[in-house]
Image (tube, rainbow, N blue to C red; front, side):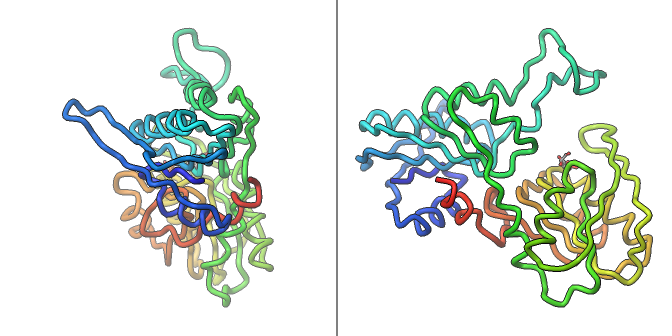
Length: 291
Ligand code: R5P
């Protein structure tokens, strides 16, 4: 039986369809003091799959409550699916003014802290395209990444002209390659990126000739949209064809969507790990395969 966090109802429903498993009747309440109660009063099953993208602190809390609710009903096996794992990018201590390396006494490794908490209520964890697969090592139970990036090729038009699948930094090149392979043709390339602050990045283009070519810029996540909009602006200065933007996790915080539009994107596509208007494809088949 599948228990869904309130922010993950689309992907949980798609997963239920894929697996032909029932959805538990889950309820979400907020008390006057702001405390939450996610419950599954009709749940009774040996096997629970809790599906919750931890897109906010509330979503983290709901996940812990649903894991506990499943145990209360006597589930012998609880699997946790994190379509999007919040705090995964904080996988090193982030002391102000310090590079993301080495130790920083007094600063948490937030990804490890949330992984430890999630581990207490589950036997196994699956997480879709985490920023780094190594984040799985932070869990105290078996945890594995699920690669759903290939689905990002689905909404792309069939008529891309001499396409380049580009990542805005070298870390996401593997995702660009996966999308290119799924699309079936095209080159891959990457830009260099230096992060200046939470909302500012400096992107240095490669010397690939993109004149008249359609470019698909691909990343694991669009958060503030700074990385993508910077990459798209650079492409627009180079007489590019159409520019499409795809990502696994369309967080699209604050003004990210309009930033991308102003930079000149043709379309933005993401998956349902984060429920947004651009969530055009589901990661459910990839998760179902891994379960
Ligand atoms: C970082 O390396 C990630 O792959 C993304 O490029 C980054 O987190 C996107 O963040 P933002 O949209 O805020 O630039």
